[in-house]
Length: 282
Image (tube, rainbow, N blue to C red; front, side, top):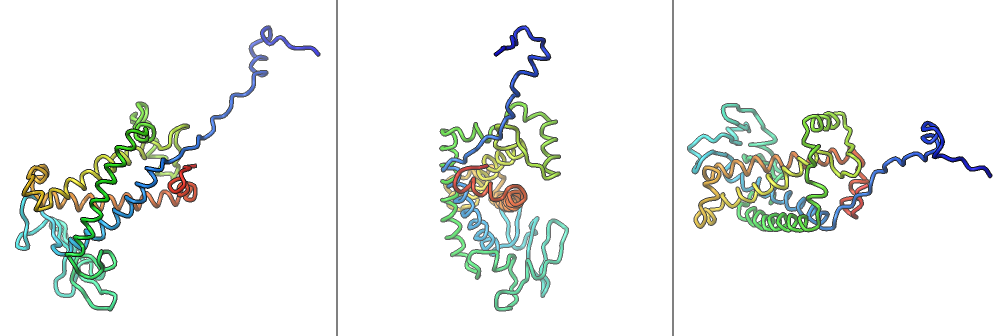
């Protein structure tokens, strides 16, 4: 059998004879057990905290800036009722919200004048003491769960491997292209990367900014903590400012959760759900 001397062959022939380069396959990614456990425990804790927090808000449905606030002072946000009309007021803008916020009917068809309806709160009937018990119980789970996740993720490399931004991902052109792709419902990532730059920035903002702020503002709102350590409330300009920031971030987290679930449903829901339950991401 005659063998061809490829060394002496022209460059064009050598290129034709060379085996094609393998197309990089999308790598399999696995969520660590610690990530999966924290994900679901944190989800339950956040829902319980949010719903019990709405019940606590019902006790005084106004928000203020500064150190003090009471019913005789106008807050920057207020949810209430006048007569048979429910309303939401933000600054000088007021909208009617009868049937949803301020004034609504309970499960027995009885009209109630409270900020948030029974189906959105824990407990469903008005009980400030029970709401505080629920809130404080899940606050401990939330706080120590976040701390444990951060420590474990630091040691197992999850933060550096999955969340940390690469130098090229900070380029404005890369970030803009990612935003455009998301607007077109295209959620691809670069080969070897679990998340695209927009996802990474979102997770960084949630894990390292929003969630810690919820803990610190919660401490700043506590009368016991404020009496022993006044600096948390000073950081935010007063207990009422901390309460307002706590409220705003809580709704921002719920908005993030809604968008997160919507994107999962749009893009490979079964695959992503399997990844966050048994570990394989795709």
